[in-house]
Length: 247
Image 1 (cartoon, one colour):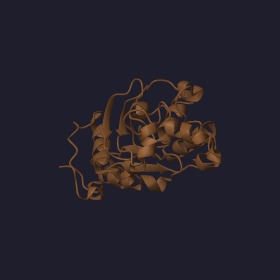
Image 2 (cartoon, helix red, strand yellow; image 1 turned 180 degrees about the horizontal axis):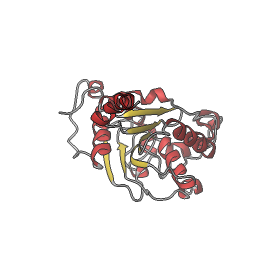
Image 3 (cartoon, helix red, strand yellow; image 1 turned 135 degrees about the horizontal axis):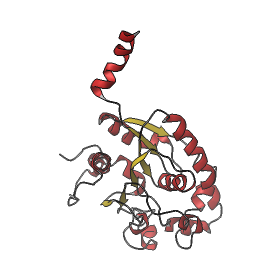
Image 4 (cartoon, helix red, strand yellow; image 1 turned 45 degrees about the vertical axis):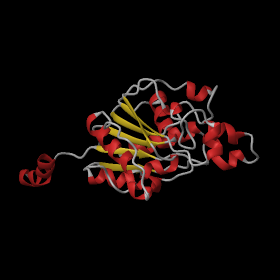
């Protein structure tokens, strides 16, 4: 019996247990949109749990309960859980930490989270069919006097926030104060108590494919700090930058 236990356990002792990272996608997305981040982190040696949830059909409160249950089920054997979230996924994690905290939470990277709401929601809210367009959870992410967002606590864990600054729609960006990624302003991503903050010149949906975002995410998970920002390089083929990491 002892030799069987030895044969089973020696690989873990030799290589160590993989650290677990949970991915939470944003509004009107699926776990598939986090696929590039998933593959990047797996290549770095992490065990990745990519959670899917019905972002368009339930309220924020319902989604937080749903997502927490999935996290607990999929990470029951993990000693610590790191997180990478995109957009609304960061709000769901903050709601979980307010209402029913996860005891083993580690470092968190939030990619363009609407911590102070999204002006884009305010602009869409009065349009016919807005609730069908962005769902009940999306409607709850308006900026300004938002009691639901204001009820969330400052960060109680290590968190790095990555904001985007490339708004492709000139009209929408002109209505969002300051620099923005087309959906959320840079200022609105900031969270009281955050450990580090950086800006990547990319648009909101493409942040999860951007090579610099991958580098910054990996750096924060490993060290608790982002890499120093570098000047943006004008490129005839900017799409290629999304698949090429900096040296």
